[in-house]
Length: 169
Image 1 (tube, rainbow, N blue to C red):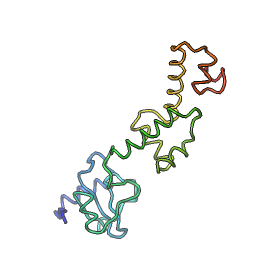
Image 2: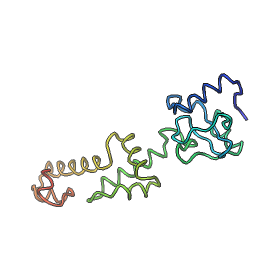
Image 3: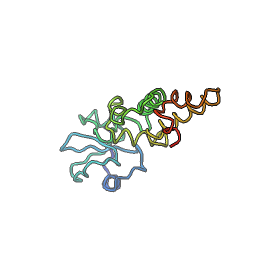
Image 4: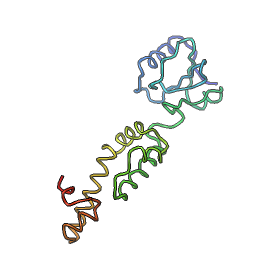
């Protein structure tokens, strides 16, 4: 087990938990004795009492001591992990291929995430919302079809618009 027991050092760590400090990244993890869960310092879960907290350098150290990862902050995954990126890339491919906009709930369910978290993660990684991404892809398809020489009506419908007026909105 690898954790620092110096009181002053641990008080600084506890203050980072209380202030939900994310800037520290994965500098340390903390476990709550009463719940058997370990978290990142920036976790949105309820702040534990100081006497119920243990500090660890890595998620593996916490798990070796019998603590399970928090379901909210997912400390066992690296930030910006490949897992999240793969989930979002898969969602982007779906948005690029579907003619009709798939509901956010459907995209989130396929990704195994809540709709709110999926939306936030998508926007964080891609820079725009799933709906904005879909609309941009549809507009780009229309532009490509027009450049390829398709007539306006055919290009609009084959790009995924349901009506001529929909393309002008």
